[in-house]
Length: 241
Image (cartoon, rainbow, N blue to C red; front, top):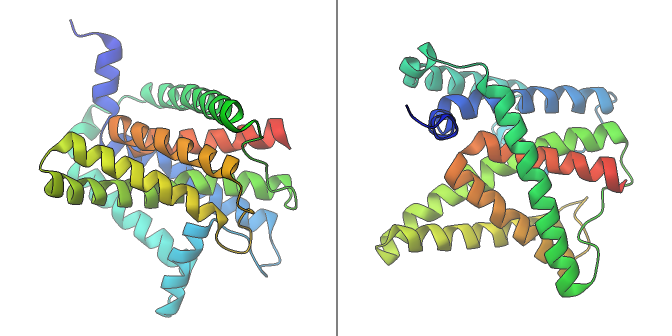
C-alpha cells in the first residue's frame, strides 16, 4: 500500500487541483476589490493585475468581464483535459492543501525574516498602512493569484525551458530560472504608484521569499504556491499592521 502522504502529494500535483484550489482567490479578490473600493475611482490593484487589465482595456474590452471569460475558458479546458482525474476527485484534499499552504507560509516567514534580520539587522517588510484592512486583504489574495501566475507559471516555466536548452541540463535550467524569477519578483515591488522605497533588507527578503515560492511552484504546483503567498500576506496584515 502506497504511503498516504506520498499519494496525496502525487494526486494533488496537477492542473486540476491547482485550478480548483486557486479559483476562490480570483473570486474573493475581485469581490473584495469592489466592496472595499465601491466608488470605482483610482482603484488600487496588484501591479500584475493592472498590467493585464490595462492590456485588455487597450484593446477596447471590459477588463473584469474579459478576465472572467478567460478564467471560465481556462477552467473548461482544464476540466476537459483532466476529465479522467475529475472522476476520482477527492474533496478531502482541499482542506489539506490549505493546511499545507499555511505551514509553508509560516515556514517562509520564519526563514526569510530570520535570515534577513541576521544579515542586515533590519525589518524585512511593512504592510501598506495607507490602505484599509479590507483593501489590504484584497491585495493579499490578489498577490497570491496574479503574482504567482506571472512570476511562477509564466516566468519560471518559460525560463526553465530557455535555460534548460542553454545549459542542456534540467537541474541547471531550473536553478537559473528560479534565481532569475526571484530577482524579478523582488524588483517589481518597487515599481508603480504603491511601490515601496528600495532598501537592501526588503529587496533581499522578497528575493528569498520569491526563491522559496519558486521552489514550491516547481515541486507542488501553482495552487499551493498561490495560497502560500496569499496566506503569508494575510499574516503580515494580522501581525504587523
